[in-house]
Image 1 (spheres, rainbow, N blue to C red):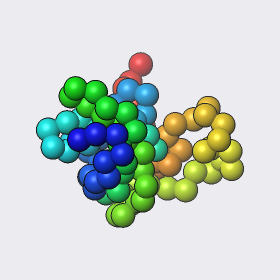
Image 2 (image 1 turned 90 degrees about the vertical axis):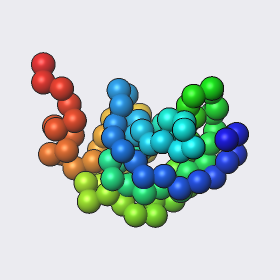
Image 3 (image 1 turned 30 degrees about the horizontal axis):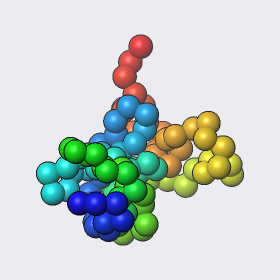
Image 4 (image 1 turned 90 degrees about the horizontal axis):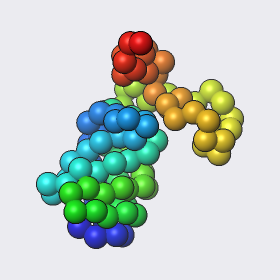
Length: 97
């Protein structure tokens, strides 16, 4: 797998920082702005030995937990990373203090 490779993945869960994690051809794939349960068409933009970062080209099957962010600046501001995920799921994903 190399930079520019396009493929489809099913997003498994979130990792620290809010990126989604999927697996493809034995590598971990990290995808920003994804939601557990999404099926995505992605393109690799950063490659490492055991993992890659990919950008979503298309949400081919959205997760039932995916919602429309309520803030109009969500995609450009950078202050929030989970508004595209239902609040109840955000709570379930966040460790208790």
